Length: 347
Image 1 (cartoon, rainbow, N blue to C red):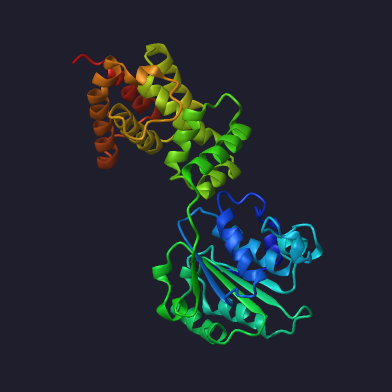
Image 2 (cartoon, rainbow, N blue to C red):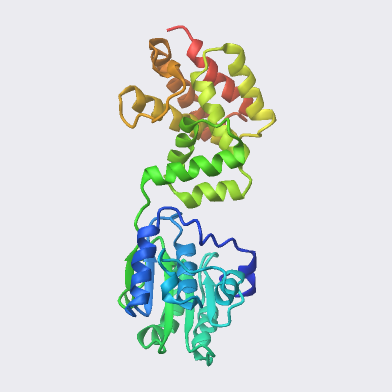
């Protein structure tokens, strides 16, 4: 169930200093604030994992920051004044967050959120943030219409969504829809290279980082989420699949398959999914489409490796059919070995 959060925000990691590739958005929003033209109802929309939730909190911090405008040469709140610290801690009396992390945001939560704007404010300003606003039920949306139609003076309501078309037209029609621009792939790759190496170690090559970034859809949020959830083994498991498909030493392939199953506890479905993605990448590289910036494994391109792709595809298809039909309980180590060793199958 969604909930209006103040104290709960203490445990959340609002990354307001390191929003990846959103500098242009921040500069434009800062200009609207300094010029007094910030719309009272803002809808931040864009792909999942861009940092819209963090940008919404950043916007609230900028709105309340105690530092004067002369200090905003970099279009950012100071994050050090009393107001900024309270917002980061989730204790600011004039900022409330309705966090739609559950399946839906119901009328009761919307009523509590609405009540926030009926209480007198010592600062004269109020900010309310609705995360994942597309999860508002019809009844909750109707409950908020009065506030959205006639927002109190000096009040700002910020909504975020990855699915704007899922919002009722009555809500969309009252918002200024702000499309959060995608960061460039180069920006995401540079950022990911730094944080992944901090998590996994400096021995992770740029080509490995690029593979992880591609599989996360160039989404900073998805990459950060994996790292925050201590899924380092999961990320390394993706790199192990590459070893299965490219390493030409039979003993190494068997060792990698054993390590994936026994130590990393990689599931059969994960092996198959990662192998499919890796095989597609190999095809693209061979055809010269989307070539990696830094290729450290030259054996990806030799004729022997390329001619064995047909056997890999056959092994993957067989394992996938067996998994779907559920006729046999597939062993992850045997599946990994069959995929890796299929390249030594006679033509």
